[in-house]
Image 1 (cartoon, rainbow, N blue to C red):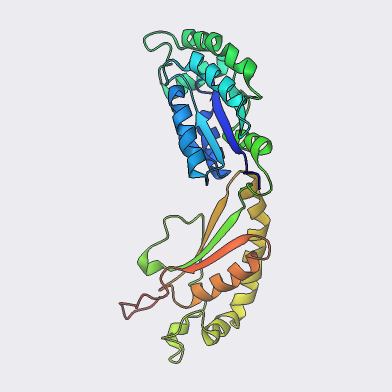
Image 2 (cartoon, rainbow, N blue to C red):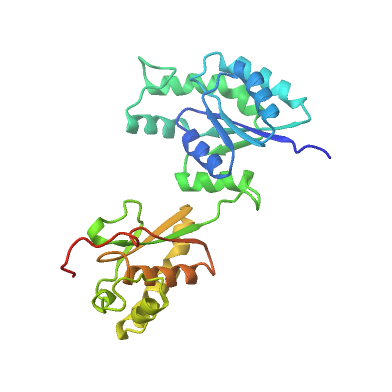
Length: 296
């Protein structure tokens, strides 16, 4: 059986044109990413990758920080081109001189080719040095008018497959306000306005995953209208998060102790959202014992 070929993407281009965003995008596509590797080390690195056998996609940033970059990268690409086991693509990121100067001015960084001079001079020198590399590149992306999200989408278009497109993942987590709000929550809903099963003796020590507690919460007059409105709100806005390039959305549902109401609502919400999204349900505080007598 023929072994699957290794895929190498060399990410290069003008300093300030978006290589950091590019590498983050390749990571999301499942590439093994290495930033700022000297080209002279690539042959040994590639031997180790092939010996490993498990890594099939690699993205490398090779840029001005690697001195001697220009002559070595041309030799490197020429050598890899003859290797039938390696499929090599060069992604060159570019932008206009005016835009690159503006980006450096905004970050107040010095250009690597003009550490003690004008940024415009450094950009001009770099463009001259990179001209041969750009002419060899299979893909050139001009980021002048692209937002980071648009650059990410552009890279996905060129390098993703059905297997590698990151799926939009939804995390539904219940929590208790007495233990603090989850720091990773994108959307938070407070359900403390619903009647509290804690005050029903036979439900007090059960969790919202228990059918009796779940039914108690769902059968309250205020619950159904609230739930349907909230579910509609989420289903209306979630495509917008996807369009903006967000790959993970955490929805937190909170009640006083995180054991009854929030758990029941999170269970129902997670199951409904799972019909359209990859969804995981968790209950952060469900097994924590309440430490105070008073309940809000």
